[in-house]
Image 1 (spheres, rainbow, N blue to C red):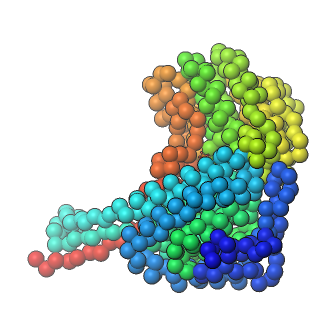
Image 2 (image 1 turned 120 degrees about the vertical axis):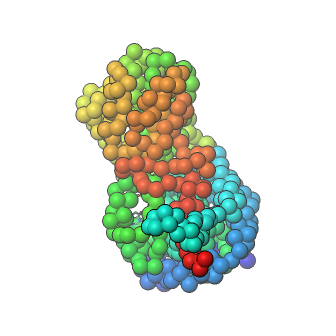
Length: 487
Ligand code: NAP
Ligand code: G3H
């Protein structure tokens, strides 16, 4: 029987993977996971106790030395197999993902395929970890007889905590680099998204991962999170999620390596010479894909007043063309992940309108479904100028100079990405150099991929760098062995 089959019991009660065994929770406690768009049942998620989570960490710790000692070719081969299995199951897993997080069917299946590619690239890149040798020189004192042999070693047990919005991809982008470098993993998926996460884990298990190398901890982060992040046997944390949770984890975990990919308020800065048809296309896809539930979504437009009306003329019809409804029918805009997210976005829209923003389109809601909303005349006293909606609501702030755009962009607590739209490459670089963000996109929407590019945020948007080779670096450390030659 494959791990895929062992994962559920007949009654849609899922199991968690601990030390190579698919287990039922000792307490018998489960949480019903329901589809955000029609409340139908996706499955029952086991809720693990601290004691069970502790056993997952112990299993990972026990398995780590042997896994690290395995040839990298063997680790890489298992990753390649996992990628093939994922791809074979793309439609099946994509359907669960679609249902669990209301991502439109096409994008859900694409996420699984993108992840298979990510794992393959990681399996290749993991073979290219090289060290270096250094010779002693003039400080302190001239001593050519000392030689440092530097190589990279795994960190130990990596705790991977992923968010709801890419339950397969943002999980695998932590798990695969950790595994290929000889770490073992304790994987805590977002509760809404955990069933997709378990299907990903089953693919790794079916690929032949030894027992204990990858373990899952499922249960509410608010209940089990503090225990996990403070556990003395966790050697490194890789977290993607909200900035408040990231900051809390960083405080709780103390002095261990961490990579944090957190929230964003990515600005699209539009200069007068930009090709507005291209700009509108990039902005609408950047802001509204997966209903705006992307850390890298365009979350504000900073446009020169002189061309704002022309840009709006192009934006409104594109926003109004977005299909709205059901992810099963591949709608662009689908219900948000839960009631409180929809309440939050609606609150931001209401606040802006109350303070004088002009509603260009959208602004209404049906339950968790927020119709795609474009707001003009947004000013800096409105919450939506600063807060991350994580939903389909896009504010336009009109500016009168490059400097004003830069100042507003940088006044944000976030610093993930920004876009600059212009034909003037010097202006683009002049502005890019002043923006306090991890990445600037010139004439393109804000986005993470291609997945081997470095991806990082500054300020409240995170710390450390993801992207395949960069993740590999962050999940290994240098170790130096010094040879003291006698002559
Ligand atoms: P979230 O609520 O912060 O949850 C992220 C993960 O943290 C989930 O697995 C969650 O588990 C867990 N968690 C919650 N409280 C915890 C605690 N005290 N200790 C340890 N883990 C805890 O974020 P989300 O709602 O899933 O995602 C939306 C946010 O993530 C947005 O702000 C978005 O911008 C950001 N995000 C950033 C990136 C990026 O790459 N920069 C990518 C995606 C999302 P439960 O689900 O069980 O609560
Ligand atoms: O939500 C955060 C993701 O890292 C964004 O990835 O730009 O490929 O949608 P994406």
